Image 1 (spheres, rainbow, N blue to C red):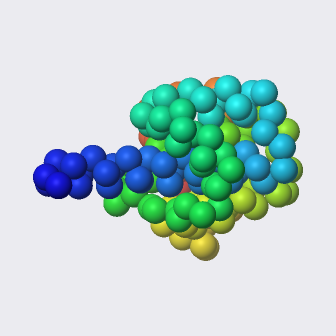
Image 2: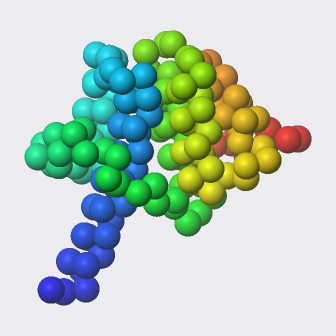
Length: 143
């Protein structure tokens, strides 16, 4: 196996783990709505997840670890994807918000301010901001 194969394998595994975390959020209310399913399909395509892996992850999403990205910007981008999933069906409940907070902690955000970060993230997603504006707003939320 070449070094490139190892790199590709690790990259694909991280994408699958990220996707599984988003499926976990979608399943927090035990139902994947049509909007959530459409978002998941788009995200799977963007993350280069095969059809077979997509269906496997939908069934076995709890077996994937939450692997936090190493850079702050990557963590914010993942938080953006997760917040969009939570808000995909336009219904926010304590269960979805709590799951997003737990995933945010898993991504490396501080337990002391995760509720503020999640609240701001959900407000931004509700307002329809794009990923770049989301990242900037979260970075500057304490200014």
